[in-house]
Structures are given as structure tokens and as C-alpha cells.
Image 1: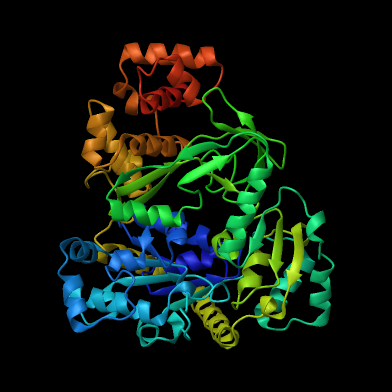
Image 2: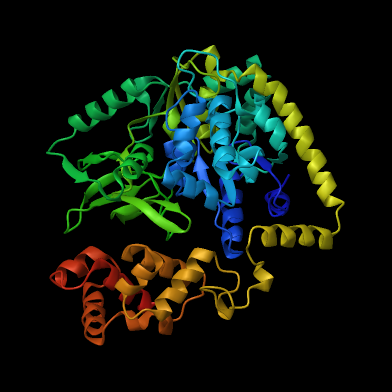
Length: 555
């Protein structure tokens, strides 16, 4: 199934299981769907099975969202206690659609506990209290943490059968274009690894003393990762510079963001350190997984990173946010880097790498080898220092279930292919109306915070643009939206990238005096970087105001 075919099905409001091999575009497809929902005035509840996955989608873990926390089982009293928590009950009652990322890493018991709480809060004995559920993930990847006992996958639960999701199995490949490598990965995925596949991988067996200096090493255990990163940094001369993470919001929410963030709370770097970017650049300068080396520091002490392609990037702090009901509930800020000498296979899930050194001699979990190998774009970028049999094994239960998923997806694709376009559009409009939204075609400016020239914008951007137009200054706009000032500016930058922002929309947020002074300083500094301008102005104007003036220059 193509991404476009999957999106068509998602937009009908059916329960859906969106799956596909690594690099098939699951994250891209679900993000497109979320943007469409918000443009239609529907704000989905976006959750994930793990903290790392949650940071990738600006959501929270399903455990936190549902209030079940780390519980392994729930008594009747536990359900009543959770349902009586005002913030949990309000969140679940207001929800319109539930999206769960990395469903493969969610046990059936956790899946069912979240469902039980939703039914109790919403007083409806339907799956998740009647919420439409979108499940995203690939069961061939890492399974739930078992804590020493056999764990049932989410698809084995009674709840999955009740949901009866339409399966959308993406079959296109966007990460790997190496046919030999795809053959090996397909063989692992189908449980048909032969001697020829093993020999192909072993041709990339590399002596540990001869591996590339800057490629990350993937290990099965945290202890190996921590030891190697510390040892390699210590080998470099000089004193390490420390960059500390800052945060805003409720402690419990901030803690969740910190656990899921790939950048450490205290980042230690030296000149010559091998690093990896941990976030995507809005300007496309780097992506989560881009490798490089610290070559020095700018005048403000920020690290300058030279990527594998020879591009030098001055790295400044970026934000990871937790959004709920269109509002930022918590955020953390850190340099989007981590030492790349080593990382766990678990933390690499979701990344795309040019190269990686893998010690799979101690792989102990089904799917670990498959996840590690599938992070890399081409076989030429794979450097194996160890390999055991378990590394190339996938769970036998998944092999059998995968055949069912593929068949169900093909049946769904055929059914929708035969459906007239007008019937599909009717289903979409019916779903949007049932959710209390307005289809993109019907948005006319009569609704709250939406005007005629905003048709098709994601809801959060449309609301911010209207708030900015109505506000006297940036502080008022932020207060009206319940957001921090930096998020308001970020939204304006996104609107500019979409070609939906003109100078008149926001010029009134900056006084004429500040505009002239900042504009001259930007020109004098000869670039668009914020830190030099901020310091040249003696801190008289905030970073957000400088960003606004910088944005005006492009309008």
C-alpha cells in the first residue's frame, strides 16, 4: 500500500493499524494525517509506547496520558482512583482521537489497562471509550520490555480484536536503495535467512581496531555505551565544555521529556568529539542521525560541527515540547547533539544513519539485529564487529501474524480502490463533522480563530496567526494562545515556510526603534545567527524579538 492510499483510509475515521518496514514512511504518513486533522479543527491525542518515541511526535507516553503510570495491573480501586484524577479525566473526556506510536513496544496488558481507564472515564463500554484509535508501528522491531517473563503483543489482546483496525501496510522504501542490502533485510523479516545472506553480512565484518573513527557504535547494553562514550571523550585533550538542559513546565511532564530526549541533561563536548544530531533542523541543515565532529566554538561558546559532507554548522539550543489540546504543556531546551561513539540499539530506533559500527555478538532480544541493521541506508555503511545467531532472528509469532497483516492490507487497498471517489469524500466529511471539525473545503472564516485566507492551515497555526493579528505585542499573543513566546515565533516561521505569512500580519509586534536597531545589527553581523546579534545589542532585545525582525527580512 502506498502512503497516499493509507492516508485516504485514515481520513475516513476508521480504526487503523499503520505498519510497514523501517524506512517505509510510517512517521511521515502519520504526521501528514495529524496535519490534516488539525487543519480540519480536530486535535488528536498523540501518544507513544516509549518516551523516546513520544518526543519524536511532541506527545506523551500512553502510560502518562491514561494515568496508569508504571502499573503492571489494575484493580477496581486503581481504576476508580485514576479516573477520579481531575487532569486525567479532563484529558480523556476532551479527547477526540487517540494515536499510539510504537505499538510494537506496548504489551497487551498495558494496552488493555489504558482502554479500561478510558471506558471508565468516558462511561462507554466501547474500545477506548468510543475513541477512534490509530495504532502505528512494526512488530518486527523491538518488543515490549518483558521484565523476565513472556509478554503478549498488543495484537494478541481481546481489545485488538474489538477495535478490528483496518491494516495499512506501507510497501514503498525511502531509506534504503541498495538492492543487496534490501534482500538481506527482507530475508530477516521473512524468517528466511540463508547462508548466502549470512556471508553477505560477514563480508562487512570489521576488526574493532580498523573501524571508522566517527561512525557510531551500536550495542545491546547501556553499560557498553556509557563506558565507550566516556573513554573516547577522555582521550581528547583539553577540558570538556558542559551544556546544561533548561526546562519549563510541570516537573512530572518535564521528567518525561528528559527521559525521552536523545540529548543528555548535561552534554559534555570537546574539540574533536564525534557527535550525532538528535533532532531535525527546521531549515533542513541536519536530521536526527546526522554525524559530525566538533571543530571548535563560536564567539558565544556554541559548538561548531563539521558534518560528514564537509558542511560546518554552528549549533544552537533547540526545544523538545509536549503538546496537549494544541497547547505546550512542557518543554526542554538543549544543544541537539549527543556523543556518537556509542548508543544502544533501542535508542537508535527511528533514526537513519549513513554508517554504524555494530557489535551484535551479545544480541539477546528478537529484532535487535534487524533494528540495528535497518538504521543504515546502505550495506557499505555497515561495520560488523560481532554477530550471533539471535541477531538475525525475528519473533516466530510475528512471522505468522505478518502474513495476516499483509493479506488484510491488500484486501483493504482493493476495497478502497473500487470505491468511488465521491463515496470516499463523503466518508471523510462525515467523520470530520462527527468530530466537531470543519473540512478544509468548508472552512470559511466563521469559526473561532480561522479566517478566509487561512483555509487549509493546521489548526494550531491558524489560531496563532489570528492571535498575532489581534494582539498588541508578542506577550499578549502568547497569553491569548496559552503558549510561550518562542512557540508563537516558531509558528510564524512555519507559516512563512508555507508561504502563508505577510509582514503586515506581525510587524506591529516590534516597535519601530527596536526594528531599526535590530535590523542594522543583523546587517552588521553579516548573517542570520541569533547569539552574536543578541550580545551585540547588549541583551536589550529578546531572542524572540530578534527572530521576528529576521523573519521580516524574508517577507
